[in-house]
Structure formats: C-alpha cells, structure tokens
Image 1 (cartoon, rainbow, N blue to C red):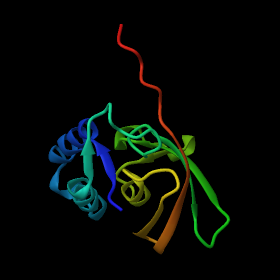
Image 2 (cartoon, helix red, strand yellow):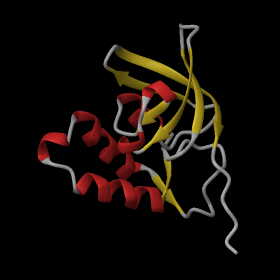
Image 3 (tube, helix red, strand yellow):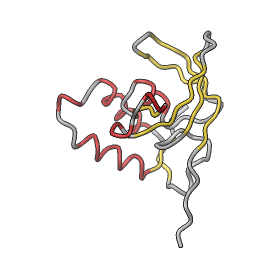
Image 4 (cartoon, rainbow, N blue to C red):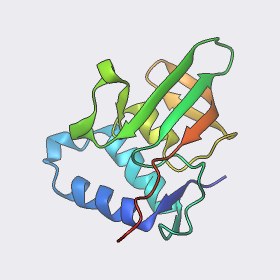
Length: 130
C-alpha cells in the first residue's frame, strides 16, 4: 500500500524542507521525504476525496486502544494542538499523509510501533474559480 499525494502538495512540502536549517531536519522530516518519494503522485484533479492531505480533517484510532483522535493536518507553522491542528512534521502527521479512509497504517511512533486505523477523512471543498 503506497501513499498517494498531490504533486502540488509534494512540491510545497519539498520547498519547505529545502529551506529548513540542518538542525530542523529531524528524523520525522527525513521519514516524510522518504514517504513522499515513494508515494504515487497525482494531479490535484485526480486526487481521491478520502485521502489525508494538507488541510484534511481526519479521525483515527490506534488498534488495541479505545482512544479516538480527531485533527486537521497542517503545515508546521499552522499547527496548534490546542485547536486540534497537527503538524505534518509530527510523527503521526508523517505516518498518515497519503493514506485513505479505511486504511490501517503500521508505523513506528515515539511510544512504539502502532497500527493506526483511519476512520474518517474530510477534505476542504475546492473553491470554484470565477
């Protein structure tokens, strides 16, 4: 199961990463680069609706736990856990980008390897061009 990412998001993320200081290129940033490199790239118009991407609202559950997590995936400068905005550069953000509603993602998190069930994904509606 390969992640799917819009080419516009991939370009935006790589541009952001290329402008990071070397000390900001964490393990998670390196994992993100690897995930994007192996991902299937699609145009914005071809992006499936239920795939986690920048700006996606999602609900996930860790297998063997009853905790539901509901957040929106954001660029690091917009992240704010008090308002449920998760940084793309966080371990969970890296784990989930490009995967779709219904997927089970097996990923090493700081608390250990976890299987994450993606229960719901909602993406912002595109604004029609006038």
